Amino acid sequence: MSEEAPDVVEARRKAEQARAKLMATVEELIDFGENLQERLQPSHLARDAWEAAKSKTADVAEDAVDAVRKRPVAASGAVAALALFIAREPLMDLAGKLMSSKGKTRPAKPRKTKAKAKAKKDKVEKVDE
Image (tube, rainbow, N blue to C red):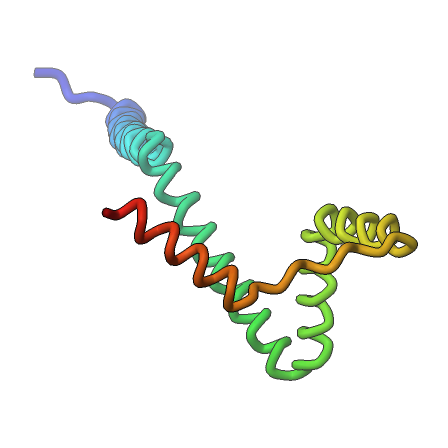
């Protein structure tokens, strides 16, 4: 068997190292692709979004509680303003009714007298018989 030149042996050794390095890189890329495919599944994306939303909501709620503790009067005013804003339509209707009936006098409701109550009771008793 003929002995190969040292340059050829060195070239084969380098080629084998390069091939091994290439195969390791290919394996890493395959693992990365599988991992990425797993993370991009809709169920995982939805779960991650839900977790992020819960975390952000908890942070906002905690900040709101801290703000209310620091300034309770301002917070009460803000809540009252929000309530008035939400109930603006019914309040405007009520104000309009009050203003339109301001000039008119309402007839007083008749008071129930003992005689009327007794007559009504007698009427009910007659029906029951």
